Length: 613
Image 1 (tube, rainbow, N blue to C red):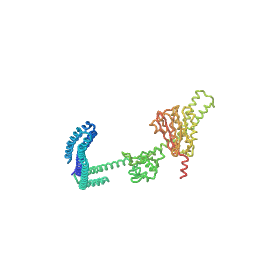
Image 2: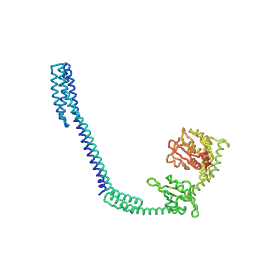
Image 3: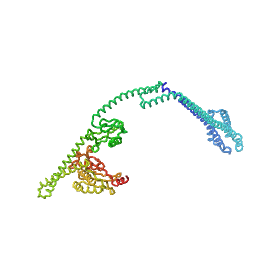
Image 4: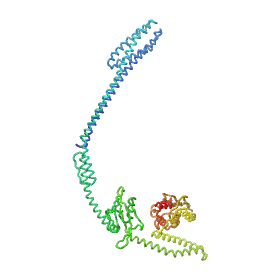
């Protein structure tokens, strides 16, 4: 027997009972409604006819009343009332429905004939006065009372039947309710019986199948579900067996494929000089190549938090929480190790491993061997420093000579000579600034130049820089606006280097803002720090150039501006701000302007924190 058949059988009993109850209820209600309607209509019509006949007799009496006082009778009223009585009596004769009603109707008909005969005699009497009144009292009036009594009896018998019919309907309704309740109880009992008998045969295999599925879910793919019936549940058990058989085959082939992949991957990783470590989300190392094991003692089964070098643990935590690759570009983060008696440097990098739903399933740590690149960078920095120092001395002499010639201390100059000397002076000054910037960047990158953080007034720094830069802004026709609240606190900064930052940012804004534009410098308190902003209404920076704007010697293509640009100013700004423990950010919309922002710690907040420690 199939599961579908069992379900149909289990529901047939209650459905049959409900069907029977519904049919009985419909039939009873329909019959009661029709019977009640018919009975009430017939009885109501008889009552209405009786009342109409009584009303007609009363109108006849009113019409013959004037004859008692020697006046003429109202023939119109009498004839109309006689006609209505006759019509009502004829209707009653055809609407006899109750036992005894026919006898009352016949008696009423007989009384009416006598009354009508006496009425004609009374109306045609020639006597008047006392004789007419005696005839009315002894003949017509008693007969009228007899007619009224007979009509009233018809009315009473129909009214009584209406009342008794209502009681019968109520009784029939009560009986119907009892029948319906009995049938509902019988349906409930029958349904319980079906559930007790058929329910276990349906639920038992389902429970067994559920337990089997839970074991398969826990990894027991060798389990075979026994198909104990040939219904749909048995078919489902067979399907589960087929599924586990396929899963066992997949597991076997996938395990072989995984082993091949792991060995091939490990062989490839062991062939490179970089150290590669793969961790799970908890930081347990699952795979490490030979370089990682030999140089950093990183083995599978250990945790990344147990590594002696804290930088690797920090990188792992950042990649796990930020869900993005963490790549370090400066050699300050390089890890120093000794290999075969030689010094080597490895720059760490952390890359999160995400699944299709972008959930973290692991982190790859890569320690790239940057020994050669570090040495080349040191050579480059040393060469730039050496060349800059060597160029500085003769360049100073050239500048002094140009200034001496322009001051005409050695004699007057012709206009053409003055023009050439001015060009030489400007180019030498520009070359001197480039050399100074190169030396400054080299010192910052090498760590030889340190910043001295002391409480500095932002207002005083900005006023000095703005006043120094204002003539250049006036000459170019660009507005320079300073927006500085009166309650801005002091910041921890190196005063001279902070002035260099604002000078470079304002020079940059002036270069790329056309006459009539505006450059605005502002500062405001932001979460215990001071947020500085320099924004202009210039040509803006193309989107593709924003990631490179702080690189040395980089010049964004297509930017407006008529002044020369060495590409070192923003690089110096970046190095100085990072030396202060902060970060400079840039946002720009081409054609609308550019905005540089950075924050510096408020001196008061840092002092209070130190006191609390």
